[in-house]
Image: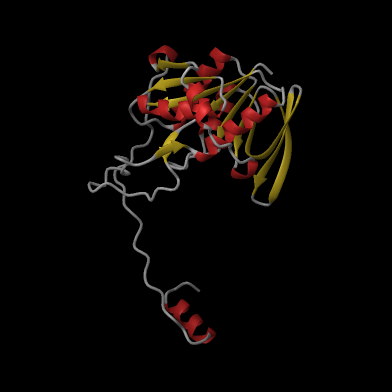
Length: 249
């Protein structure tokens, strides 16, 4: 295939303890380490492996966000992506708008495969990949734990509630990745230096003729309740009694 398109989202690093702002308007991000969404990093790693097997010629990474998202795109380029596209937008976006943006990029780039993380760890929507497939009118394979490209088809093993399911889809298609698909490579310093010379194109929503829209607005954020101190019970009978008093059984 000629090209694989991969989405990368800038999120708070998964190792960072999340803190809610004092005014409850959102999650604190000032001075916080930001990284590539882990599921998206897995998507990029899989695209690179497909290219390294000689089954694709080019891997293009895309991020939607402010200028600070260039940092994550440069990391993706250092991992091995050939070029990057930043769709500039400072405000919040809903999954449908993201899918429309990817659709315009699909029309422009003509990829045979779009690989996205199954969800972002900040909002956990798990919607963009499915919406893109519907808008594109192409097959989708979500929650992939194994991908095999065979000419004009892809055989995907996906994780479902009852275990594993293997399906085959015609290309072009949309695939979303699960955690067990692969382990992303480490970025080395020479690769970081090389990434500075790779193409990072910046385009606006107006260039893609996409109007930003928000279908749902979050009014307030609240941290989870503090975990209550546990108690000791002498035996199973007392345990059952306590659980009944709390209405748990």
